Amino acid sequence: MSFWGSKAAPPAPPPPPPPPIAAATGPQVDATTVISLLAVVALLGGAYGASVKLLPRTVALKTRVLFIWHLFDALIHFVFEGSFLWNCFFVSYALPTSFTAQAQAKKVTLFTPPDVYWLGKQDLLYGANYGTTPFSRLWQEYAKADKRWGGTDLTVVSLELLTVFVAGPLALWICYLLSKDEKKGGLKKWFWMIVLATGEIYGGWMTFAPEWLTGSPNLDTSNWMYLYLYLLFFNGLWVVIPLWILWEAYRAISVGMSQAEMVDLVNYLGKKAD
Image (tube, rainbow, N blue to C red; front, top):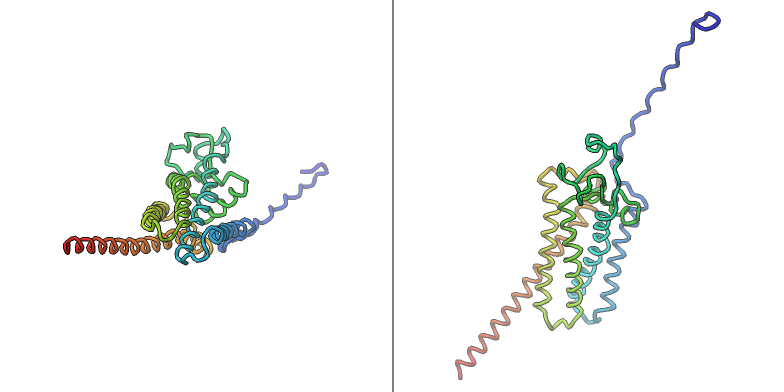
């Protein structure tokens, strides 16, 4: 009842809710996507330029390809995967003190088992997801296809420590050997290439096998770019090329062993004739 004795007007009905926004199913291409892909091309171009500068013009095509691959491999390990480790150890987000375990489970994806905390820090979250630098953005881009690279998955970080601090220097060592006389130390070069290629293939298996065995909860295969470019192409390179290297190494070692056996046979026959 109003002051003048009439009834108050009924309240206006609430506005209708906005229509739901359909989730995007295609690749989300932005400046970070383009810059990240161009960075990969730049590293490959740098490896090719170094081969022109450091290798003789008369070097065999196979040797040049092996040099370019191993230098590109080293650059990827040091620049890209090294920045991933930096994000894992030095980029963090401080959780609010009122951040309960229930709320944490709803809002944040953790990559450690229950009651296990990265670096033993219960109040901090680490990884590229919480950074704003260009390299954090780069790994946020790749994490669209594989969520683990935005945080601190224990298996991934353990493999990347070996990749950056063992595989990277070994790839540079192979480049140094390949830059020397092609006719000297052939088997030595192939030995170290076998070691690195085996490690690359094993690393790829250990990266994805845990996902396959658990239904791939962290992989996004909903569009062609994440599936075929990020997951299959970029990771497949580190399977197909190492397999080719192992095959070439097998052939080179077989030829070397055959030549050594032939020399031993000639020496044996020469001694017998005497």
